Picture 1 (cartoon, one colour):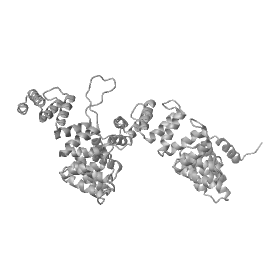
Picture 2 (picture 1 turned 90 degrees about the vertical axis):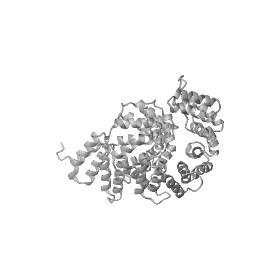
Picture 3 (picture 1 turned 30 degrees about the vertical axis):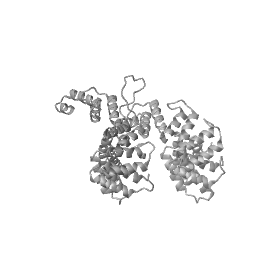
Picture 4 (picture 1 turned 45 degrees about the vertical axis):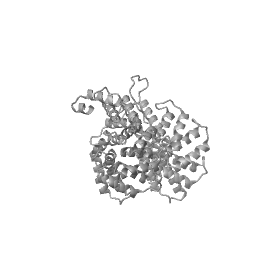
Length: 529
């Protein structure tokens, strides 16, 4: 009767008939009534009542209802009410335990879609504690029934090595079977296998063709991957417009990484029409969804006023979110903010905590800054010996500031045994990373070494390092370059040396006045009265 009434367009009467049949124990009617209650077809929408009827049908042993109930618990339904919300909005939270229970009941009855869902729920990809062996077993049952999604799921387990040694070739065979019947996800993973040469000979052209096919089939991961390739010019000519097109498609499908990449595309000036405002909007979209890198980028946009009103407090709020999400550069930035009281109260102890977080994750400059705090006793116990240990560790990890500090310690013997060769080595490493004081110190060391070796050191190399530092605006480099010119370019170059010394004074080098005085005395040709 419900079917006949629905066919005539009388949804209200059809819903009444379904309700009567459901109350009489018809599981088919229970499922139909649940659909009507979810869609609001012939009755007021009532998701809670719908779930009750689906549960009743599942408890009566209906495999379709059990599979649907498992899917509902796997995905959840509705949104959790906000604090203070008394409107009674329905919310079914995700419950992996119940999802597995109902899916397994349906899977045991041979329900193929439930077998696929159970495979995913038991795999490590579900985010819950997994059982790869059981996941593979259920995927195999569904795959043997010809289900393409099950073949993709089983392939992922084989390629990940969750069952032991990774079987990339076996995974590719399953991807090929699923791709042959048009499964978009299989086409995407097959494309990546050809791109990387995993389980199959590397074939970038074939991989690109497959990737485009998957992207056209609306696979967000494929659209994002194509966008990244065009953005970076990987296996294709760099094309900002094409990158924007594919990344936007993925972002509009909810791909958070694509949102963040669109922000990068606009911020880096690679978009078709670059816009700092649009960059900030995409960073905001990704940041709101928990993307730590986008949260950091949004903080930087607020800090600099690029695409957003400049707001140091809002910047720190986003830095803190990114830091709490484990983003190491944000942890370092929060350490800097607390160190200088930038948007937060100055707090050396809190600064040290953030630097420690970043240092433990391998951030070299954070480790160096911990050394600085120990050296001065800011927020940490004053301990110059421990500071030097931390400088050394940071220098080994690549911190230019630490390399400069270690080089100076070896040069002066303050904190480390005096060692000219070690001083040169560490100062050179800092200079090569663009550390301007390191470039000046390296030049001075080379010049001093040249004097000791009777002019055999490379004055040209010292000059080159000073010119790099001068280009960066270093007044100290300008004054030192003046001394080099006066000492090595002959009497005719004294005026040129004086000009550099005067530039050094304007740039704020406190030694410049002494250099100027010495050079002016040398350049004087008049009579002394």
